[in-house]
Image 1 (cartoon, rainbow, N blue to C red):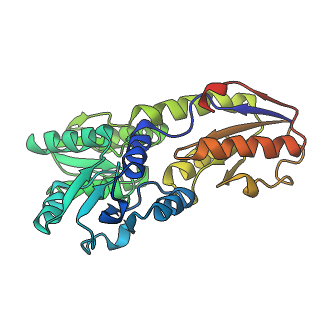
Image 2 (image 1 turned 60 degrees about the vertical axis):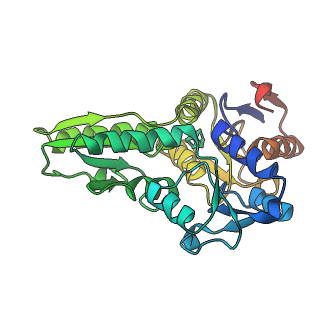
Image 3 (image 1 turned 90 degrees about the vertical axis):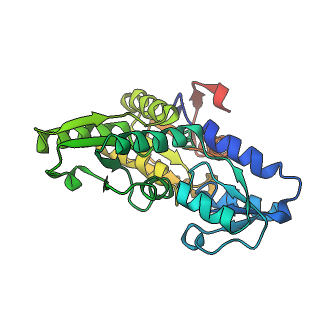
Length: 290
Ligand code: SF4
């Protein structure tokens, strides 16, 4: 079996910087992370062991019992920031600049008097942070959510990690259903997401199946799996090398390998070793990511 690794995969700079900030805190026992820094159980366990408190996404409304609060790369609304500061917290802000760019675009479109359409997952923490600062908005998860919004001015932005092919599909539906509206589209998909899709597009013609490494709760990992399925390739979502099922790979001559983010590259290396144990003969392309 031959293994082909995608050109672009692994930890994006936004999460990498946030993790570096978290793991270099001089007094971790004074710090609470406001939500999940990464949707990955291995990393969350590591942060626990350093003594950092972590507030689950669903209980962020309860002020953490620590004086320093770390905002994750996914960002929060201005309203949430003010709430925390009123509660006496000192904020350590690791909001990714590319997430901040989405907030700024949403505010700009809103200031122009447009109904802001936020393409993304309704319950995703990044989307919640964006819409909490908007009065006039709608969240669009898929083309099925698109309708005639009955507005003369629409503004469209995307959650930073929206798969570009999904965004394009939704954009064309918005135009189709709102032919008379003045529509402003701002592409707020982040560069690492574009690169990941391009790399996967380049990989798929070369392989019969794909193994995607990432946390079980990771929306981005699930989206890469769905992308493979939409393009007719079976895909296996694994968290680590122990999840690689040799039976699933049985009969596959060429398998592709990709990952989304935090710590995935290290586990990818281990997965690659496991593949070799299950009969893989060669690993080609892009050692640099390892
Ligand atoms: S916006 Fe992109 S680069 Fe920033 S944290 Fe999210 S995935 Fe990473």
